[in-house]
Image (cartoon, rainbow, N blue to C red; front, side):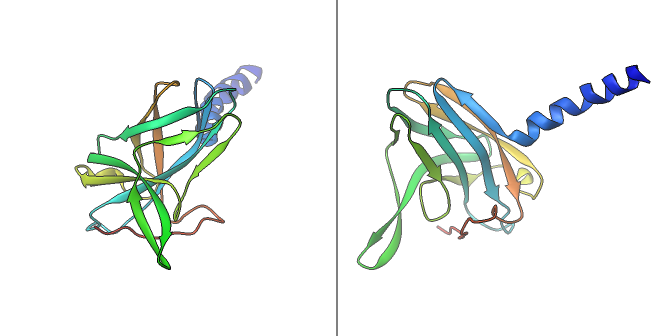
Length: 159
């Protein structure tokens, strides 16, 4: 009986870690990368996550890439002339002790020229590599969800 309990605990241990969906790169912690399931004909998809810098020096997110897209860009939403506008940004700085949230209507990653739509279905995951100035590269699994997490506003990108 004890052997069965130990075996069960060993089998369930990875599930707990998978549910945490957090990554660490140097002093940076990346939490819950996600994307919303989109219609099959959507030309682009956005990815979101939260970065916390627990270090004493700033770092920068320089770029992002994913094998499901020919191109990935860092974007932000800004208000211009009473209109919300999406625009690319060259880098995103993460100050010491700061948390930067990538979310709808804020910073986000735009994945363009989609090459593999098979992973853009609710419950699937796709890899995405974040390139940092100091923390270097970290590859995360982006969870595709039918709807945004609670408390998150959603929007659909079109190009």
